[in-house]
Amino acid sequence: MGKMIIMTAPSGAGKTTIVKHLLEKMDRLSFSVSATTRAPRKGEVDGKDYYFLSEKKFRKKIEKGAFAEWEEVYPGKYYGTLKKEIKRVWKEGKDIVFDIEVKGATNIKRIYEDKALAIFIKPPSIEELLNRLQKRDTESTSSIKERINRAKEEMTYQNNFDVILINDVLPIALIEAAEIVQNFLTQAAATKVAKETKKKKDKKKRKGKKKEGKSVKKKSKKKD
Image 1 (cartoon, helix red, strand yellow):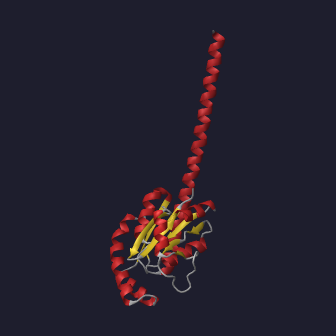
Image 2 (cartoon, rainbow, N blue to C red):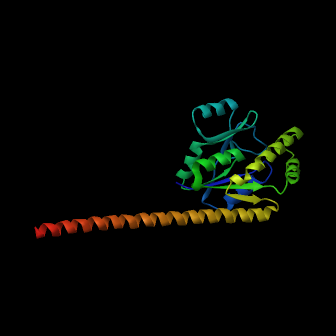
Image 3 (cartoon, one colour):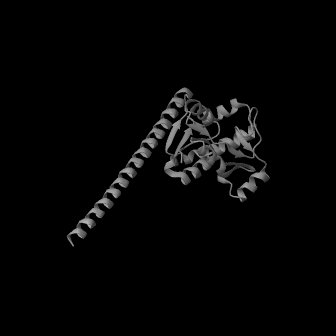
């Protein structure tokens, strides 16, 4: 079973840019495609950026237990991680990187615990976050207001994560993110090797004790 890198942040904090950077730099990572009921943005491809589902289809999958986690982020707008998506990536022999919203990230971390590294990407300020959302020019004024209100709530969850990464200067944040992830995966690999080595040693010890026990029995029979 592989590892998980959970990247989460309030909308506009830069998590998608950081995730794309990690995928370009690290061959061992593979992107977990989330499912959503929101409409595709310009340039987004179904099955690559998201699995775009109708609300009806999404709800049916909830009923069937198809999601590892899901959340109604905004009224009528659902996001979730399909169990089959996690299996797909691990079957490829790769570690998973998630680009998911805050509550979903909390749920994934709770389920997979030490197998997952959860990183909260934090904007330098709410004012800067507002500025970034306005520059996107993909949201209405009411939608931006809704996202800012949600961001304020999501910021209260930041201490629930393993690492808080402040995305103030993007090039620096990209370097820091890569270092954090690499350290986690290297440490995880070392721990796995250590466990496997310990198992082998324990197995040899058990075999040695069995042989020793058999030889003692043979000696005692000869004496009789």
